[in-house]
Image 1: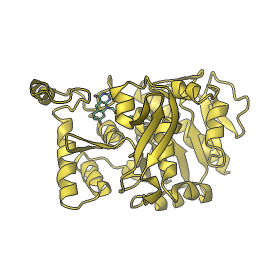
Image 2: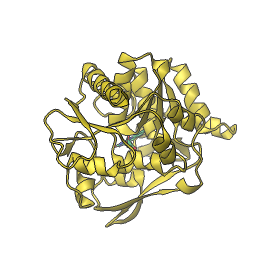
Image 3: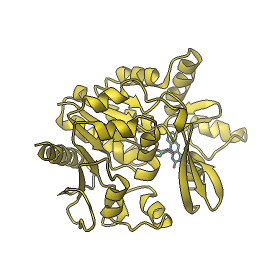
Image 4: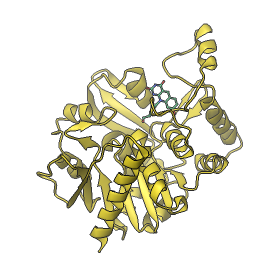
Length: 307
Ligand code: FO1
C-alpha cells in the first residue's frame, strides 16, 4: 500500500506521524511545502521540512509545534548581545540542520538530497520529498504591503489583513525528484489538514503537481483543517475571513474542487455545500492515538472511495 501525503506545517506533520503509526513507514511518501523557506543570517531554513523531520524522529517540541524538544538558546542569547535579529529564533540544536544544509548547498547538493540524508541519519523510514529543489517563496499581500512568509507569520504574527498569496519562483520550479512518481504510483493520496492557502497551494503552484493529482488513479482525500469553523492552530480561519470565505468545510472543498474525491471532516461538523463525499472522525489530533485514528479514518475513507 503506497500512500502519498501533501503536507506543510504542524497539522500536516501530525497526520504523517499518525500514518507511520499504522503503516510501514517505507510505504509513506510526504511531499512537503518549501514556500516557507528563507535564508536567515545566511542560513537556509526549511521550516515545514524540519518540522516533519523532528516530528517523525520524535525530536519535536510538542508545545511549540516547531523546532526541537529540549532545545537550548545560547546562540540566540549571544546573538542578541551583538544586536542581531531576535525576531526569528534559531535553537542551538536546530542550527545544526541549517548549517548542514548550507554546507550541502555549497557542495552543490540539492535540498532533496540533504533532506534524505537527515531522514537517514535519524532513522526515518518515510520518504520526505521537498515539493521542488528550486526556490519558491510564498509572499503574502496584506494591508501592510507585500510580506515574505516568515515576516508575516513570525515577524508580525499573522496580524496584517491578508489580501492575496503568491508564490515567487513557482512558474520556473520543477517538481522535486520522486514527486511526480510518488503521485502516479500512490494507491492513496492524502492532503493533510494544513492551511490550504498558505501550505498546500505552494505545492499546487509547482507546474505539473496539480495535473499529476488530477490524472492520478489513486483516490485523493483531503483532511479538513477546520473544526467547528475554527482552525486548530495557525491563521487558517482568520485568513479565510479576510478572503471573505465562509468558515465552513464547503469553502475547503471548493478550494480543492477538481482535485479531491472526498473530504474528511470533524464528527461534529456539517457538510452543507460540500460537493464531494464526506467522512467523519474526531479530527483534533492531540495524542499519538488521535493522529493514528485520523490517519486510519482517512485511509479507510480513501479505500471506500476507490472501490
Ligand atoms: N515560529 C515562530 O512563531 N517563531 C519563531 O521564532 C520560529 C522559528 C523557527 C525556526 C525554525 C523553524 O523550522 C521554524 C520556526 N518557526 C518559528 C515556525 C515557522 O515559522 C512555521 O513552522 C512555518 O513556517 C509555518 O508552518
